[in-house]
Image (cartoon, rainbow, N blue to C red; front, side, top):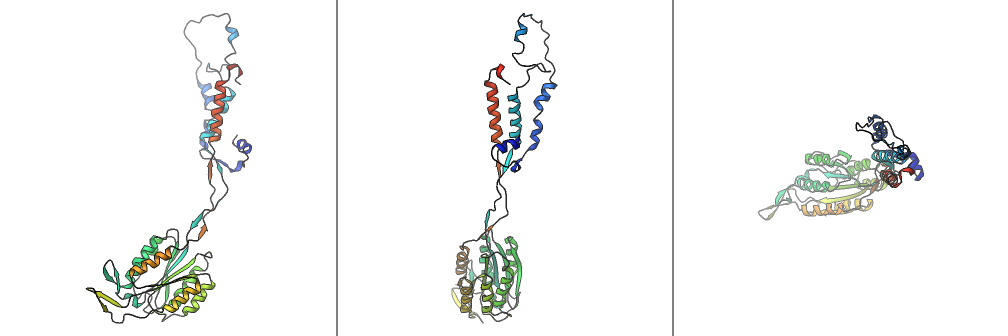
Amino acid sequence: MMAAIASMAGFDPGAIALAWPAWLWALPLPLLAWWALPAQRSSAVAIRMPQLGRLRGLDGPVGRGGGRRPGVLLWLAWALLCLAAARPQQLGEPIEPPQPGRDLMLALDLSGSMDEPDMQLGGRPVDRLTAAKAVLADFLDRRAGDRVGLLVFGRRAYALTPLTPDRESVRQQLQDSVVGLAGQETAIGDAIGLAVKRLRDQPEGQRVLILLTDGVNTAGLLEPDKAAQLARDNGVRVHTVAFGGDGAMSVFGFQLPMPGGGDEIDEATLRRIAEQTGGQFFRARDTEALAGIYAEIDRLEPVERPGPAVRPRIERYAWPLGAALLLALVAFLLPPRWRP
């Protein structure tokens, strides 16, 4: 019956399914009740009527239970009611809902200069790495839908987390990072090369690297300009962030120079890297400026990638339910002698 209804409606019967098929077991219940009910007999004195024979047959055939058998229309209405209770559903065409998101690699400098306490966070002086962690943690909170990876670099570059939607794992690895973990020097080129290796197999247009450093390339096997060419050839967009103050610490409102502070940042190289790869160069001298930079990066248009294919289920119980109500109404309105 379900296939016939689907065929008449112009749908593929194979695309119809029942959510609660157990309700079909209720189909023979009226028949079982009719057979199981005992015959109704009256103990009262019967009254003889000469014309009783003429009245027989007007009320339909009498069953075992002493009652009139249900008509065909009522049987069909019951069957359709059971079918509606089973919740027929039509499977729609497969669709791939878009999922907004990008593949982001965060490259964080852990060289010795990141230990300089020339930043302010919450009104107190902190070192550069602590300030960067706070801003990056807030940035991660807004990256719902992205797959984020974290790599750190000093004398060498290391990947701490692969590309993953689990931002909590990335945040934990970020908090556990300390100055000097990857060495005291700065290998900017190697950090870019490692990020390209991690991103090049991802869909085109979603490969983004955000590199934060406070120094000059002083180590590594790959020169920054060569690394930028490699990133450009593999479609990796690199945003570079030069982070660091003037090497001074605020004490009672006075700026005191720090020993060895004020190391020059190679802004020219970082700017070239961003320009060659289609990214942007940013300069942050304090925590507020760094937060503004990541807010601007956060406003980049996300790339939509197709999600897993799904087939929507369209409820069709209204069809048999409406037909059952219509048949019951017709059976009720028809004169008894016309009921099938």
